[in-house]
Length: 312
Image 1 (cartoon, rainbow, N blue to C red):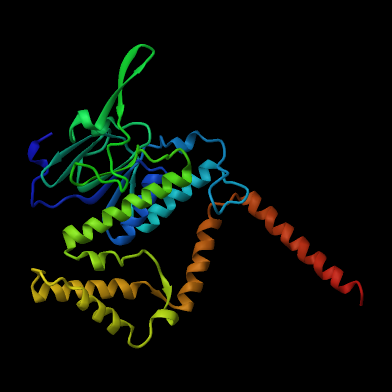
Image 2: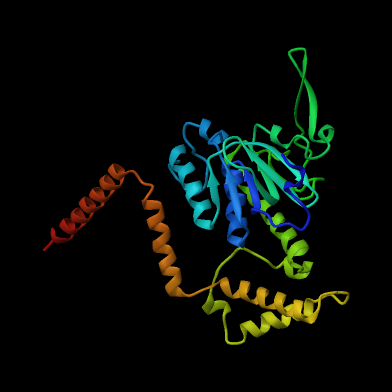
């Protein structure tokens, strides 16, 4: 690959590439795409999740959920959030001073400012990104020496000695359970977003630490002077040693206020989102199961009416 593929100051194809489309990768992508980062997930369908027979300990599914449906829901959610999912295997990643060049097995290479590794078993594609002796460790098995990724290489927040490289998996944190892997992906993504706000956008810690991917009912937060209070708080947190121009501060203030306003939701929109969420789940239900459940409800309803009329 041409060493000039990724150069300082050039534009990238994407803000972020995530390698791995399982629970960790999709969870990370949902957060980053919702923040507005152009996020691509490379997934060849080799997630360890697909080795399970049935998922029974993920909250929200009282009787468990079959793996195919859960995997489809993961990808649906990531795509709805704004991610692009590419069914391809990443073979190598090369780094330049300002970003990464990602080489997939079948498709064209792409560039990205940041990368999140989220593949539980294989980390070979990261060789050469940093100090291989620090990234990989030697172990003995059946009298022979082998190498594997050192799970202590990333920090707890997913950051690494390689600028722009984050690792959600493999990691020292136990990620054998799906819920923990998903949580790990979300944690790494929120740290990445924090760094984007500090390093790229120019915010400072007191503002950055107030960022949350939440929505609220506007009747509880959106009073007539709410925007004014947000602006006042923003101005009060500006560091005394800030080197931003007044024009830059005005832009950051407007961005901050717009983000806060986007978190407010009306009752009407809340009802619409509820219906939309239910429909999205319904599209993944088996037709025969759904039909049987509806018929069962109708029979129960008819029985209730009959019981109520029995004493007339």
